[in-house]
Amino acid sequence: MSDLKLIETYKGFLEEYSPEKLRHIPDQGVWSINQMYDHLIVVAHEYLDSVEACALAVGEQKQGKTEFGEYLFNIGGFPPIKIKLPDEMNAPPDNTKMKEDIMLELDLLMKRMKELKKIIDDINPNYKDKHGGFGWLNAQEWFDLVGMHFRHHLRQKYELDQQLSV
Image (cartoon, rainbow, N blue to C red; front, top):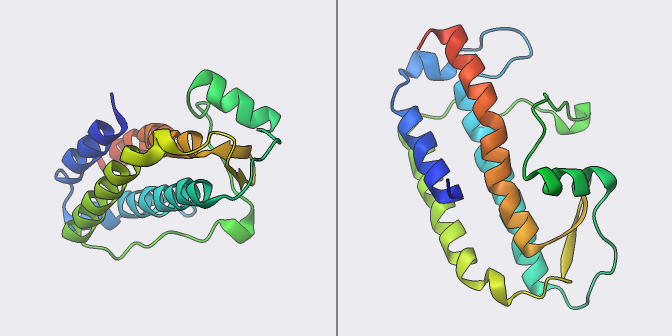
């Protein structure tokens, strides 16, 4: 499934939730569906910012991915584990958005992805931007992370659905 098709699927999922279910936090330290969507959108834009940083780079970067970054791209996605970020990077995502706002943000994300997809093949693959955990990634790798991240959070969505009895 293409990344854009995957985001369309997330839009379809979003239709299933009432405002109460969208914002329901099942347990302390567990995100709501709303927070999961907010996290996905915010991180996707951060990844796309790095695609743009690669496009604007002025020199080639010889360094590559970390060992975990190599592993991630070799398997084509995040491993089926929960990833805990350091506390300073782990502020709870926004839980106040309306469904319509999330839909609009997903549409804007898809529009941005379509625009960047048009230029990505023209970006030198040795122009890179550094990821804190995965090392130096080129524009295509940053772009691919968007879909990997959305696929990774499907497990979380299904777990939250179980708790909501959707």
